[in-house]
Amino acid sequence: MRLKNKVAIVVGGGQSPGETMGNGRATAITFARHGAKVVSVDRDLASAEDTAAMIRDEGGQAMALAADVKDEAAVKAAVDECLGQHGRLDILHNNVGISIAGNDAEITEITVEAFDHCVAVNLRGMVLTCKHALPSMREQGSGAIINISSLAAWSVYPLVAYKTTKAAVVAMTEQLAIMNASYGIRANVILPGLMDTPMAVDTRAKTLGKSRADVAAMRDAQVPLGKKMGTAWDVANAALFLASDEAGFITGVSLPVDGGSSVRVG
Image: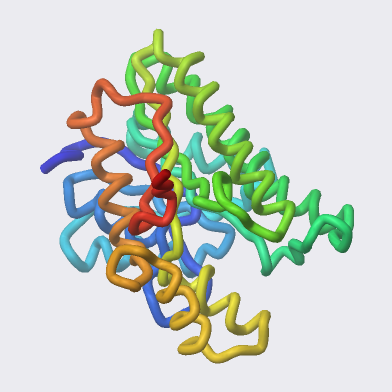
């Protein structure tokens, strides 16, 4: 098992309603299948508990905690509860983000409230989880942080708050990597491309007033590899590698999981 006896917090371990698996839930399940003791954290405790129950049903170890990443006290309490239960923290996986659901918009249309809300969730939330996870990782002299950004950080994306915050997550991860390398802590960031997840497809379909099938078909057509979106399991498998000792000499890396969408030729 690639993560045997490691303790992993998955922030965003629940998921929004939809027909498919979300990135956070898939990652939590994948970590557990490889031996990790998983702490599923989400603002929706019932959804976090659903993830933990799925893990336990497969014979894995998991607990669920409620925390809104906009609330520093709640974030600290979740990390403290993990440390109280397990005595250590080996992996922090940050998988929280909003765009359309947070009223993101083109720059001439966005409100201050919507922009600040996206920043608080997509960027400040990751800063807070790292702030409270790092002391124990530094003390034990090891740890792996995996942040979820988006290919939107590198590509054309019309909504300003998501694009800006996800680009900032890449910069923050690079800073985390270099500032914590001497402590034996690694930090890497995954940039998912067009994925078939509830947030990406179901929420978008509902917001735009389109059918799920129409939104999925439009997104599938844009993917170079097989004209088919990726799934949450693709992101989860990338996160598994970065969390494992196999990636022990990898830090500060931005890894696209995008079916070739970021490839530029000529």
